[in-house]
Length: 81
Image 1: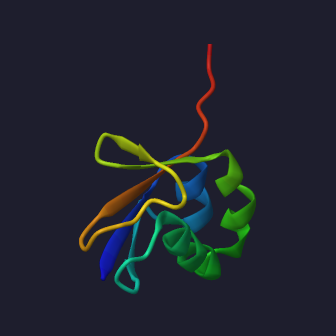
Image 2: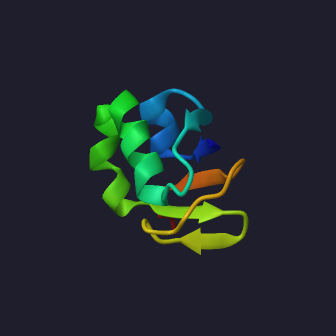
C-alpha cells in the first residue's frame, strides 16, 4: 500500500523534504512506516521518541494500523514562550 509521511520541524530538517512516499505491506502500522523511513534516514531514529504521529486530526500510537493512501504526519515537540 502507498503511504505518505509528512515531516515537520526537525523531521523535515533531518530528511531534507516535507514529504516522503512509502510502499508498505497491507496492514502495516505506524511503526512499520517509521522503520521504513529510518532505513532511508538513520539519523531520524534519535528524533522519533520525542515526536507524536497523526493522520488527519487524530493522534496515533505507533501500533495504529494505516490504510491505503494515508498521510502520516510526524509532529516534533513544540516549545516557545
